[in-house]
Length: 168
Image 1 (tube, rainbow, N blue to C red):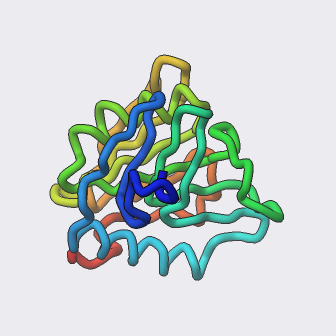
Image 2: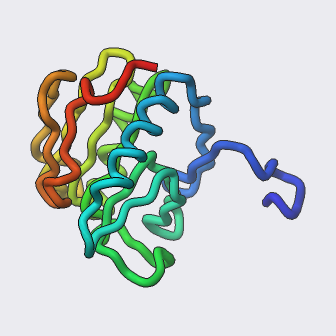
């Protein structure tokens, strides 16, 4: 579509069930937290695992998303990652919070992503989604900024408190 001139190369879009969905613009709080997590994980990510910020992820032929982070077992290439390969996905939400809490968990769970954290960057709350089923996640917990968010499926070394990162 970019080559045909239908879309601009830098447009922020996802494809959900075959429909193009425009993504909300990123703000300073979003980018500040994303940078903090990226620097932290870059120092401590254990051998045998990898993470990527803002990678395009094809969950199916009709579903393409761009989570803020994905964590997976290290492999030679990220091409071909599927939902069940993703141990943890993180969506950092500012203006997109209602969508990220209502729609994204359904999508990720239906495609077998083991764990999803939706981080409300304004209120500094992590919404931790666990136990994926085709209909959604069975468990959702809200953790305040002073509580440690510990992955269940990814290495525990990746745990952090939102308070560990400065407010942008």
